[in-house]
Image 1 (cartoon, helix red, strand yellow):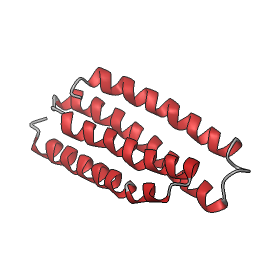
Image 2: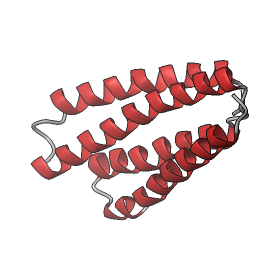
Image 3: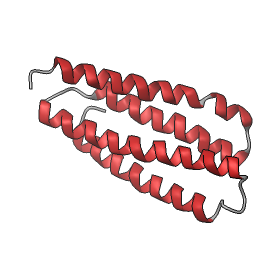
Length: 125
């Protein structure tokens, strides 16, 4: 994932999906999920949306500073899939062990942002 144009396109699709997930939670799930699970769903949506925006930002900054952003972008994308995805599945299925996967996505977010920061710091721009 090193082509900024593709990353931006993926981020735009992820943002659309985050909006759809948020609407689905607010309307279709509000009378189905417990208050605690609905809060979990909203956490998944928030991390999904913020990191999709972050993915777009990584691509744009990568263009500006001529950076290779493969690892940070890949880790942020993996974080969205693992962190938010595991929470979505947990809420929809009730499979409790899915919550044990969520921290792996959180670590992917952290490592992705740290690597991106290091790349910015080391850049000549």
